[in-house]
Image 1 (spheres, rainbow, N blue to C red):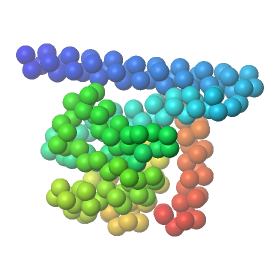
Image 2: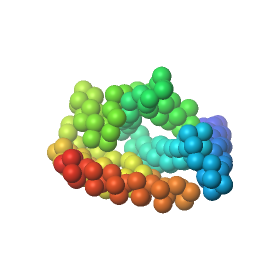
Image 3: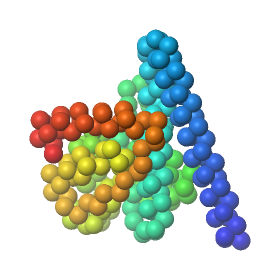
Length: 196
């Protein structure tokens, strides 16, 4: 009975992951076609960003959920504030995804709902984790997109979080070039601002 329920849950997760990937890919592909035809405006850029974001964020969360299944006693910190024009924080959206798509129990989730950058993600989540008994020097997995992981790890080390272990979520092929290019400039900016 438990095995059957697990298989059903696994199929549901695969369907949800597939649906999110299809929606993200369609939005991104549609925007790329319109841009190639010379239509470069907000109405084209917003779907492109949403499509790319859906593909990248789902990969991060799915990777974190796989790791969480291997560590059933571990807490999962999801970080991110409220984006412009939104009413719900990125952390709340991610927590809901992990609960609904992967069956992660709410008590395992630590929501940091104010940050607007990687530096703040780490800085603001530390007191929340400490309140739940996780010491700053405890071995901790840092799950992020492969293109972003080097910078995130260096920011963590700069904040004195020396026991962070990187776990890379793959970047979908459709967004890989743009993501790596953007991260190149973000790394340079972080170096100038002394975040890394």
